[in-house]
Length: 243
Ligand code: SAM
Image 1 (cartoon, rainbow, N blue to C red):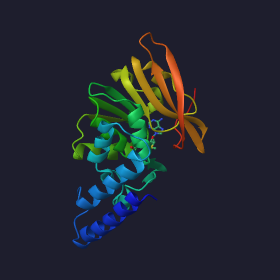
Image 2 (tube, protein in one colour):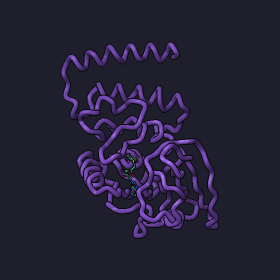
Image 3 (cartoon, protein in one colour):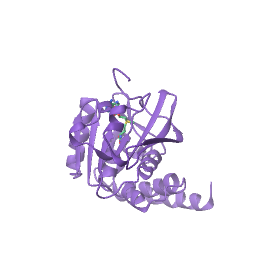
Image 4 (cartoon, protein in one colour):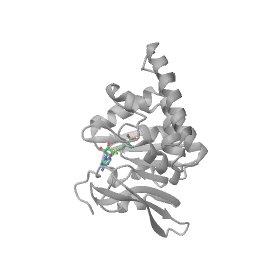
C-alpha cells in the first residue's frame, strides 16, 4: 500500500471515529459517508484508471449508502458488490464507474438500462444524460427502486417492471443501452433498439462464474461491431427463451 493511501486511511479512520462519537444520523449524506465516498473514489476508481471528470463527479454526488439496506450502509463504499435481496446485487463501485465511462454518456442522450436493481446505476446516469429508462424483472426490486429514486429526486429516471431482454420499444431508438445482468448472447432486440451512431455496454457469457464486458457499436450506416473489454462477474440475466 502506498504511503499516500496509508496516511489517507489513518486520517479517515480518526475522522470517522470523531463523526461516529458525535452520533450523527445515518439517514442522510453525513460527513461520515462523504469521507467514505471520497476514499472509494480515490482508491477504487481513480487509482484503477477511470478518468472522466463527469463520471467521477457523478460517483461523488450520488449517496450510494442510500441504495442499500440500512444494515449494510456502512459497507456501501467497500470494494465489492452487496446483496439487495432476491439473490441480486448492487454492482461493485468500480464496475459502475467503468461501465459508465465506456458508455460515453452525453447530456442529450436517452438511455436504456436493463436491470434496475437498487437504482444506483440509474441514479449515476441520471446526472449525466437527458433521460434514463430502466427495466427491472423482479417486481419488488423495481417498485423499491422507483420509490427510492423518486424520494431522492432523480426525476429524469423512469422505471418499469418487465423483461429487459426485449428492450423498451416505445422509447426506442436509444442513444445508449447499458445492461447490468449477463445474457448468454447479445439480445437482438436490444441491438435493434440502438440508434445509428449509438453504443451498448453489457456483460455477456454462458456461466455465472464469469463473463466478458462487451461494447457494441452501431455506426451511422447501421453496421454493428462488437469489442470485448475486461472479464467481469455479473448475475445472469433472467429470461425464459435465450434466443
Ligand atoms: N444496476 C443495478 C444497481 O445499480 O443496483 C444492479 C443490477 S443487478 C447486478 C442485476 C439486476 O438485473 C437485478 O436486479 C435483476 O433482477 C435484473 N434482471 C435480471 N434479468 C433481467 C431482465 N431480463 N430484465 C430486467 N432486469 C433483469
